Length: 447
Image 1 (cartoon, rainbow, N blue to C red):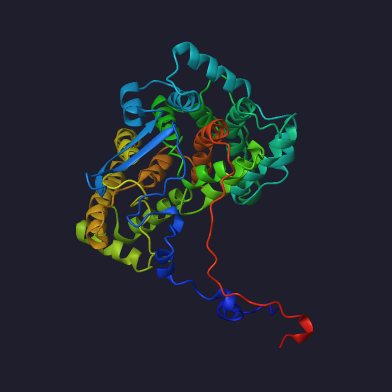
Image 2 (tube, rainbow, N blue to C red):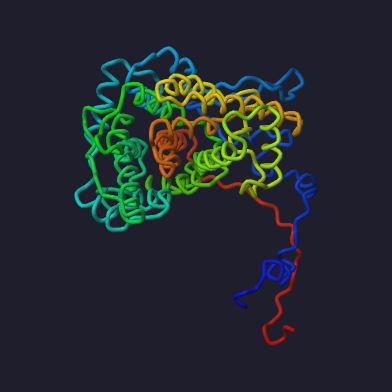
């Protein structure tokens, strides 16, 4: 095969690559992307872990737009955030709830956090051999390698018993803050020629506090900064069994493979720009938008720049307006609503009110304008404000999606275990063959 073969020539080489007509999916009742015609998701399982409510169904079973709600084990996440006030370890509390099915008592939470802290440290030699000696330009790929490498430090890595999976999962969760931060430090040292400064995780710190401490040269942070990051981790902890990376975890683990392989697969899924990688795409897009129209842009200027984005300008070949719209939520994404509230408080302290006001204005104009143009309800999703919040915290953009991995791992583990306990079947859907039937022709008889 020629090295410089064009894509068009390649597809023209064989009838096997003839396009499958879009109408055939409807003809054979195939749910493209596991989505129904009204864009609701095809039910692929039952869960008691998380519920994502983005719409209601009327008496005739038709989809009706509604304000979004997110529940962990039946507990409204918005209530968790608002009623907890400035309490510490909110992410750890959410993890306990997701893993064990109930809100922890103070004693429960203390035991759980102590168990996490016992596993903060990486295995001997792991930092040097897997992160410092082999830095990676893409941190998501480095996370996959690091998780798979942990397999070799486990005395019984292939034990897929539900309880053993839980224990292994908690150990992985405890080590992810160090892995994420050290992978970033190694990259900056090798590729950006920055000085290498490493802080070890501190057992008196929560997950959020350790992340901030390990990333900053002086290791310091404010209570307000730690609280915002704590809530952000909580908001990303789970999003139901249908989200791509969680479904990937269940699919892979249903083969009875090890937890390290399953989590590595989920990281590969979350890396994509249509899933976890959207937070970086959104942040990059908003940089270009502000550069193009300025932070004082009025509504007309914002509508104009949205048209440019949808036309593929501003280095946006996807023509998507990142941070707007969601596969489930219609009128609002509760995570975006909460992040907007929390970001407003810290923006005032950081002197970033002007930029925050632009984000709010862009959100208002974009949701109205895009809803009108597309004929469906559009709202800001969690990615719209997460990048702004991370920037206020001084978290580098390279870590936006890895921090998503760190927080979502608890959801992957919980759904993995739930499938083991209550379903157990290998996940194996079907696909209908619609190609031609051909006879085998011996090589010497082929033209």
